[in-house]
Image 1: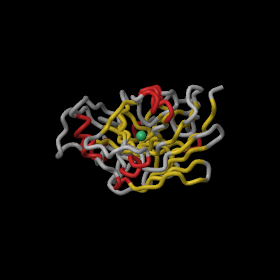
Image 2 (image 1 turned 60 degrees about the vertical axis):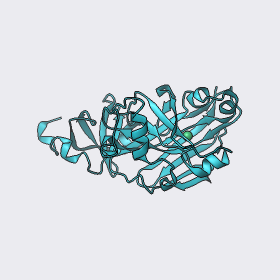
Image 3 (image 1 turned 135 degrees about the horizontal axis):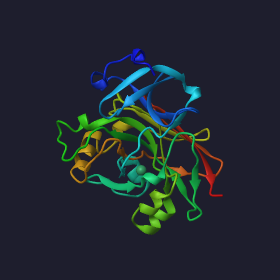
Image 4 (image 1 turned 90 degrees about the horizontal axis):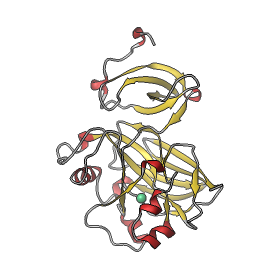
Length: 272
Ligand code: MG
């Protein structure tokens, strides 16, 4: 790429500008970061979490394969963060955030298959807003907690409900390969305080709520989690699911939509 194709200065000034960040590859290029405007894709040179340059759009979206939008060192998830979901599971509303981890090996991206494991008879979807961490952070304060947020994406906290009940703790039920669909991109400017979140399985609406129903806000979650563990750029925080979780079966297609971000779609298959 020629230097005269540079269309923007280093991105510090654009950090807070509305931008859709992706990772992608083409037939001829290895995985790299990029950005999307409408249906056109431009290359990002450097580290989108640090210093980088954006280049003009050179690809059509149809020419590229979208990959996971970030590569987290860990995925922290929040349980029972919507009152109506806590109630539907016969649980009390927590007095402090209930957190657990999902392994990075559970990640898949938009369009990839959720694989139902033979150990479970009841795998369920959980539509969730995901925070993408932007900075190396520990002991964030009320004042700087939101500055450590890079952006937001869409997640599905797929859960083997029968195993969750059986085990008591959640690592197995939430940790199978393919149980963490995330994507298709990161929206850097998004207001998480009142966004519509829906989940369809095939054509049936299963979940519909607003992020304003979250018990613990994005700011509170960043504060709380950073008081326990160091957050790194690209780490994901799944902020909990609204009511309406339900069964996934082989042949289903599950779509999670968040207004202002987009739609994450994953087919469901049985383990071969
Ligand atoms: Mg969840």
